[in-house]
Amino acid sequence: MLTVALPKGRIAEETLEIFEKIFGTAFRFDDRKLILEADGFRFLLVRNQDVPAYVLHQSADIGVVGLDVLEEKDEDLLRLLDLGIGKCKVCVGIQEGKEIDYSAPELKVATKMTNIAQKYFSKKAMPVNIIKLYGSIELAPLVGLSDVIVDIVETGSTMKQNGLKVVETILDSSAYLIANKNSFIEKKEEITSLYHHINEVIHQGC
Image (cartoon, rainbow, N blue to C red):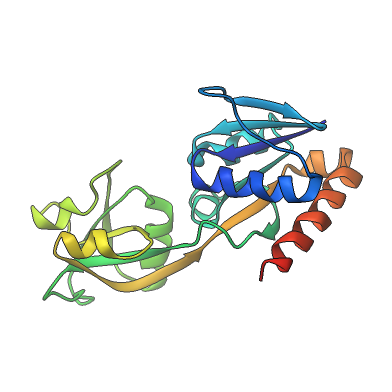
């Protein structure tokens, strides 16, 4: 049995749709259930940010998670396939009418993606003060907590509604199929077979 960690929400639903196309059977979580077993698979429904941990510690053999989470967590996992779903961007946002001052002695950056932000501004040789927030990131520049934010952007409407604009794109993200390295060795035939089936399905939809 292959154990698959899925992030709660739309990515889980779209991933299960891919499995349904491959195996011709319905994969549906019962109300409030976090484990689904069907057709030789065990699916675990977990928080998006926790998928890498489940796969890293081999509580799941494979998983589906956004590239943004993979880059932020930076764990030793195999990235098998870009599924082309859950597309978004990691962007730098600032108040309308302002621009980033790269000559300033320090830039205050509010974000929940501290590692991505640190790496990005380090490459620009820009000293930053990273302020970790867990929500309402757009509020930070409006009340003087930060100069800019680093956040997930899908349509950009949330930033616009809060008087912010996207000034730089750090990363284009989509959901990836990942695997535990030991699981890949132990269950190589099953994982490789599944990889080829998924690859075929997602390219049929292109």
